[in-house]
Length: 416
Image 1 (cartoon, rainbow, N blue to C red):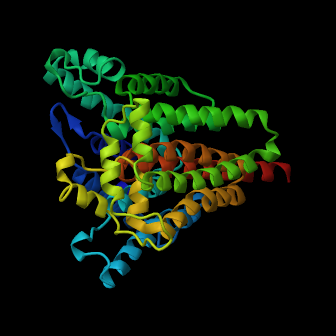
Image 2: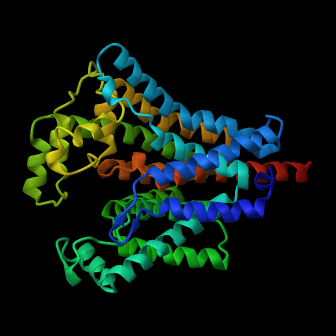
Image 3: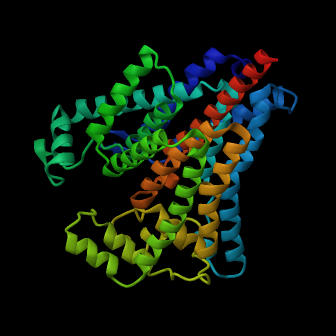
């Protein structure tokens, strides 16, 4: 098949299809995740065809490492779904709640298959598609609604959330998944010490503009935490930097359980939020409603994968929200006390040690920088099933790891 062996054609096709997959708003028209899934499956099939064309084996140093990444990144998703199926078999969860879970399988696989098909520079084409997607969405909204979309976005984000300048009630520049995902781009360039080319500088300037106009408070908070982490590491001797990551990983682990405990302990959390006058955009109501389905106890087994969303669209539909706006809560309520802990440990400790052992401290530190941002988003948003966020948080550590491995091998060959 000519397409799978034509890198130039693949790159063009990738940019075009990812631009479409990343674009979920065209003026007042919102596109669901179905198109994203189909585009993702298309690329996964191309990957399978290339694998078959290569005699069902992986050629090249980078390609041979990809099966390991597929296993490691798919494992938690598979374990969680199998656990839910077991709960269903024992009658603990109704079979009506069963889902294919494609919203996590597809972007995870797509991120790795794209590296296989296009190479380790695929992250750059992903960034370009991200930028083009924003332009496509904003230009169409501009044509449909006029220049008021810009003034309205700024006023609603920074002055009055209920503002309706120009008769607009929706912030057409608050493209949730896209704006949140941009944080990973900034973190990548911060930790890789990558010498920026002119085209990359242009993209970075536009990403900052996109963040300012899209204004997701949690992404700004996440980037602040990452910057604090970055400057702390600058003050720590290089041989102790990984230890800092490990200690912070354990800290996030403990704080996640503490967060659940506080939410489950009566109305303390909600009263404090109210007393402080913090505007949580209705999240306190979502949290209270969902936490009623859980208990803070090692004996709590969970209510099943993706059941939280099903409940919010059925018996809790009066809340008018599709997600609980906290993946920490979602993962605890769905998976139970013990599996929730295993999920935390796998990301915060196991994968961190894996990257250090296999690819060195620099890759492990980059990975942990992503984790700080990711868990900040997990605290108050629904990014665990966000298409773009999942692709970048999977693709970027892997491409950097492969690049570092290649550099180390070349340095070893030069010395010897």
